[in-house]
Image 1: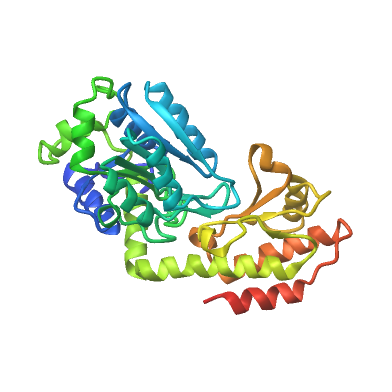
Image 2: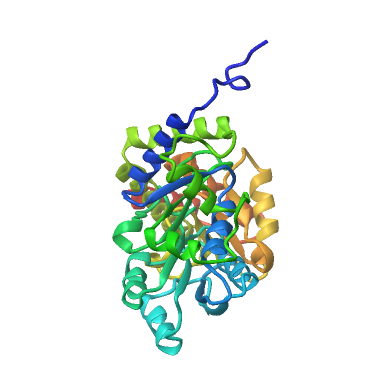
Length: 366
């Protein structure tokens, strides 16, 4: 017995290429776009291993756990890596990047995470891109969390490798991702003897066998369900209008931040300055003596599933994440999260103001 989801019609090269074109329009880029058949860690690692080698001198910006991972990959490639780490409650600045170049003028590769959903900060890619262009370095950006929640413009910002995923602000599938690649990045990969070849990590395989061949023959059978889900996701975003989707995320972030501040009980925004806060997720610091993991467990036990999580690793005891992205970037979800957190805090003996939180959140929704 057939099923429309389990027995989809085969996806041909033309439709695959058309979905890539839609991703390119989403990013407003004339660069080559490659859709990769896996979660975004696949093209993120493929981009670094393709472009970096023993001759590479990299500046790796760390504003959260993903920046740490990218530094590990760069070192594994044999690159000389200079880490620029800033406190997770803030964002890196273009001036800090400029100072890193002044200290290490040999830097020729810069790795940056646009928005760190895990820590709730977002970095000024456009301003940093100006500095990177001045120095002629290759610029690699992880825009997995930011795309759909805030502008992502590889061409305008001078980004040579821009990786996106659909599972957060775009509200799409997690099992497929994409990367835009500049001509400079392709040239760097082609000149790198350690760039993966005949490998699932190889972007050069897609360049030589797919793009250079006119996108007529796919390298392997596509993940049809994920591709169809990505196509539907892009159609939905197109119908709503990307500016409206981004505005909804900005409103969710502003409402969550304002509501949490008004809620009281010792809860406060983890990212100190609103300008540094990512629109895809808001992180909150718990009051002294209140374990974030326990507070989240209490909040989730009281009602329906909500997009709440404790911070990862060392942050599990002090950070709460409100993941207001995709379908959860709504006033109803924000208010439900604030209410659940308020009840959980009250259960620890803290005094909260749930009505004040509701009014503040509603007033901040733009």
